[in-house]
Image (cartoon, rainbow, N blue to C red):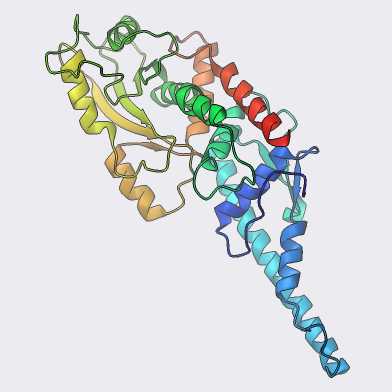
Length: 341
């Protein structure tokens, strides 16, 4: 596995890091396969007790020690495999049909599915790679600024709009800057109004709106399409592709956004969401931040909702970015080619 541009984590790494490593190796591997051989070798080395250059070591005792160390190493291998199995099982269940890896028998290898370029798998793979573009990266190469720029300014916005459409079981507006169609906020919101968002847009931004405001802190709006307005449920959402998302909620920004751009606040049930590519593993943090953000869509929640959004688009539900999923796959292919180049 030396040809894959991925750093092998230490044995003391957390379960989610070990599985990320396997997933990344499989993604880059020619045969779409990551084996646990390197971890096995590291475990065996950890349990070696006979030092080179010790000729006085009793051979009988050495045999006993070797047998004991082999047994302990085998037990540790089993524990590592169990940890990996549990984490993969969680991802598989939480992502539902959007998880693109299969764990082999006895957890000896993790395999990327053959049709990984199918659009139902691109959300998860994009989130996986995004996790390692900043701190604590498992990549052993410098990622080009252009790839990071495309991810943050286009690709993750596309995925998030699909995911919010899926979460709302309806339509969505892509408000975050930069907008692909170059429309201003008023134009974007008028399009949402015409699609049954249940809002009344001002003719021009309110008196106290900052003169050069780009998106008002709201990246996506989404709503349930069903009957006459107002919709049964309406979401304001923010897209957080960086690691500084904790405690930063769209809730307050949405209130100001409504004052600046809407004739009156929304009449239906309103909720809030934050979308991020990371796997949130700390349960206390997860529960606390869900309370703050309204809804968190992390790496194992976002993909399944994006797949639901894909289905809505195929069934004729209109929303912003609906034609742009190919941009996500193009980015994945470019990233892979650059990393292996």
